[in-house]
Amino acid sequence: MLRKLVLGFLVFSLAVLFQGCESPTEPDTTPPTVTFVAGDVEGDGPFEFCATVTDEENAIASVLFSVGDCIFVGVAGDGGEYCASVSSVCFVDGVNTMLVTAEDAEGNSRTVAASFDYDSCPDETDPVISFAPGDLADAGPFTLTATVTDDSALASVTLTLNNETYAGNADGDVYSFTVSASGLFEGANSGIVTAVDACGNDASVTASFNYDACSDNEDPVISFTPGDLADAGPFTLTATVTDAGDLSSVTLTLNNETYAGNADGDVYSFTVSASGLFEGANSGIVTAV
Image (cartoon, rainbow, N blue to C red):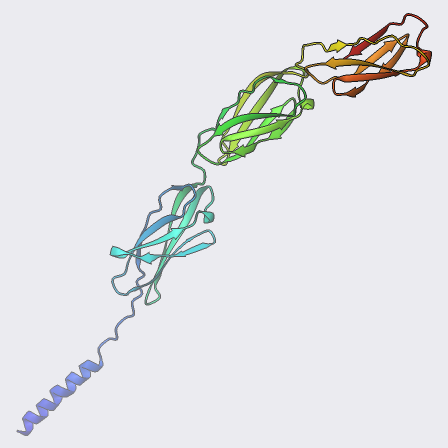
């Protein structure tokens, strides 16, 4: 009986000894596995970037997407997918590099980089311009118009005319330019409308037109029938002058003296003293320009 007790005690002691010699559990030092491929993007954004992150030992604590000075937090989805909505303000035109950094609950982390191209203005189509001014006449000012359409916003629309450049005022697709008569040549003129869009695409259209500073080809019509004069004066002689355009001057030439007319509507009056008249016959000429 004593022998059995001794053997039992030895077995128990050996079991306790072996249990005390077991190796402690090693901490997890394996970082998460990150799979990330970035596709090319264009336009205004924002854009969604996604990576697959897995860890066999620990939960994922965080997934961060970074490009330039911008950092975005990945949102967990199904199957280990993490996605972030990234603003285009963080990109440069051309090649960009995005980093995805995943960290598990033990603090192990892994960073994966992927490059992609960004084009802020994918539009490569030039603006379309319609510019066909008609002939101009008289004093002005004149409004010339052009219609300009484009897939992108237009940065500028200008008219170059006789070495002067005019900025267009937009009303939808119609751009107007105000030009004074002093900016035109008598006769043939040539204007160039140039449009540049936000992506740098440009187009120009040239159109010619004629300018007539005075389109009135009709001479003034004058009615001048003074009656006979007597006594000391002074005398007022009148003439009626009509014209399709504006009159520059109406004058009376009488006995080598010239008198400017004073207008009252179409009636022009001239004040003549007796000293400006001959005794007897006199001849006066009214001239309108």
